[in-house]
Length: 86
Image (tube, rainbow, N blue to C red; front, side, top):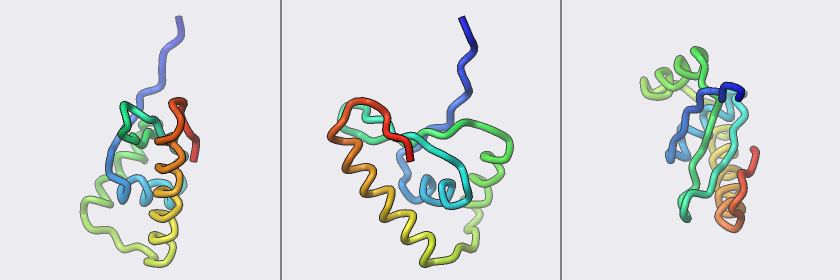
């Protein structure tokens, strides 16, 4: 039996958009009608989470586009029970 990768999950669409915008691939899981964003855990991911929580500067248009794209993927994920990659 193989080891599973450690995963970081969040319900926060803004954090998920920030991490995706910074290059981290994610999957969306429908868990009883709630969409959960999942990332492969790593030290660099943890650094970006800290950066986000410290009020990181972002390119506003890029961030807004990332949030809108994730919201569209959330709607799609709510209609399916299998993970959606983003």
